[in-house]
Image 1 (cartoon, one colour):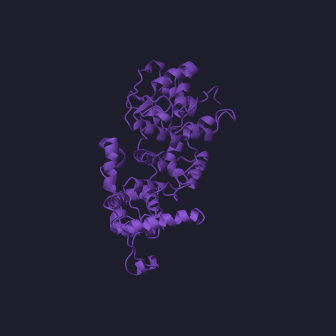
Image 2 (image 1 turned 90 degrees about the horizontal axis):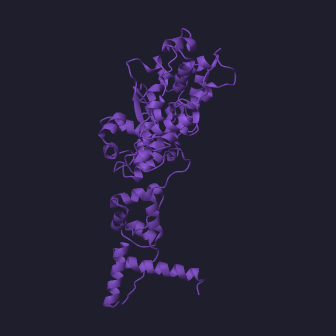
Image 3 (image 1 turned 120 degrees about the horizontal axis):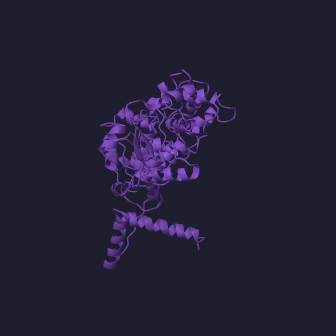
Length: 412
């Protein structure tokens, strides 16, 4: 049994707790601390930011109820962030296996790119506040997410404290020194605040929450942003070149290369579409670029498609327009108007020809209207504003409008 062990502070990294134990125990060397905690064991990777064998080995030496392995894993490691895009059943099985003693690192740590840190990160304001509140600073787990640019609480840039030697982090215990404070840097780039919020949300959401594959909101957001292949009306395949260019324009080539490579393959895009990529960093970059919060991917409700909404508005307007005018208003080619209408379940609302025209027009009337030059000019201005291509379209609009008002007024 251990004679004492520090209780973790809020959001404290498990490694930080062990580093504080090393400091408070008065051990003369890291090896002495390792022997006191783990005996002759050499497989307790305390330098991992994810659940590791040190949790079980230390808790076995503490009084029952002091801490639970689940509490440590979910609140003091990056497990929720690492597992965020795993299916719900799988992440439950992973947690259960860890609690049963299984080493999860060889199988799942490849899901993130930042698993061998060469520095620890901290916020200078958190350092000051923690020292005032607890008498000492500590390493926050949220600060150790590799892509996290700012402190989620104070919005200043996180600072790096490089590991001072070539030893692996697990072979040494480096506490955050209260003398490490520096002047806060609030010069965030335009996207960094939203990116910080997204990454923090992925960490702090309930562990069992996974993206909703049925809602397909990532593909719908991509479609609204114009990032699908132009001929992709039903399958909604990503345009990988447009996507890579948009990411690069937003974040710069170096950051995009680190997470997506020099280009995005169609296979990679397909896996992103179906949430088969488990890197939360990639989804954070995507959602911030699309101007949406990360919760959109987890919503039970589909986000509206801009094109469908606009098409339904035009269909309900009772303004008769030809296909070319409608397509121009929608920003699509005229030959795609009917395929999109079929996809959205919208009946054609433009003048038809042949058999379709006969089905659409039950009766034909000939109407003669005499207009003054001023009235004709006013009518043509109205038609141009509404995208109408023929006088018959305007006449049909006025007839429909008049009939609706007559019905609404009780046919009086």
